[in-house]
Length: 120
Image (cartoon, rainbow, N blue to C red):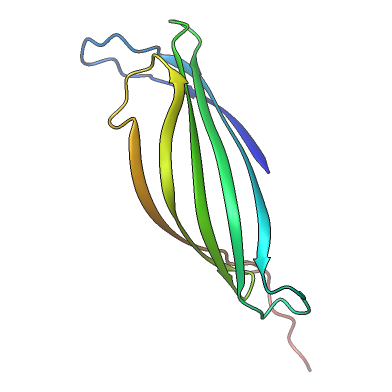
């Protein structure tokens, strides 16, 4: 999967040397490790997952590229737990941390906003 976004700073209350306009992007891919025979959405999946995360300052020209490998567990196709690391591959952009470990939990609510049909 991939994403692309444009970020803009509207309030510049402090002096900084960052770009006020940024193009950000991610590219990710996963590989199913278990189960060997996938037969149902109810099976727990274990995936090897890799994400590339990048940004490019449109004003300043600075940028960054990180790689984030992880192990991913997926339950019922709507609940994910990712455990991995993120490390800098290239870049000159300032950030809080160049290398770190992470644990992420995500829940997808598929069809949560659909109206239920009433039977008469």
